[in-house]
Image 1 (tube, rainbow, N blue to C red):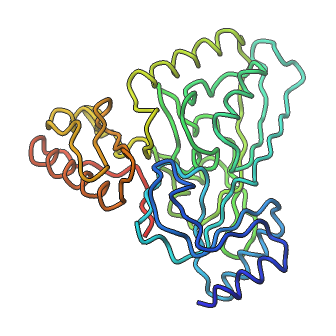
Image 2 (image 1 turned 45 degrees about the vertical axis):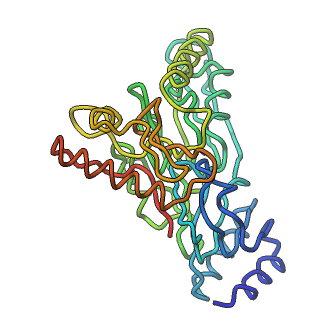
Length: 310
């Protein structure tokens, strides 16, 4: 691959900030991972479209990165162009004609790179309910759509009207909710090969004080039960039928188990935390142990919720 040629093309066409051999450990919540051959931060869809078209024509592999949550990157890094969606962070509100009244609603359109926390706080400030479950969930709006983020009985797909995407040719596509194939902590977007550039949600009017109180309650529950003060990738495994994945891992006696600087959290066993200098191989080893022990003890197969890049 002529990576210098691609870098020059990106610079000449003013696509966005460019960083060769970007250390992905700086851009993932686990603080783990080797370098990306090139990383770019596009801020405008037309130039992004041209970039994807060029990469397809020239055969350059492309990966897409948001806030880097739910992502484990190999220690060797990735030999690809990583497109960081952080610059796609617009937020637009289209309220109906009777805001604040029972039954009133608003459509919010957000860019994929917008932090989910920002969107949640903005909705609460305006008195729109529906996103309370997301209080404390890290990551970007685009990542939330791909993983169908959820908690406390709510999930992003319940509010989604459409998803805005871009295919490998740089063509914009608008997917309706049903076309996104949402499932439990996953979606068809995950394996579609499409770049998620944004989406639209429908929220309903509520009581600001009640919305904020529920968000504060959810956030406090997260702080009590999850290791939010340590680097992690969020929930490692999807919850199987019966019990939560963390409960199975805990019952298998694995809480606190450590490989290198990676440790199954003593606070919540479905989190693997980075104690300082953990490697992807250390996290992988703990995941393999958890899967094997839960399989042998409880005849339950744990499925990855995180995504692995190599």
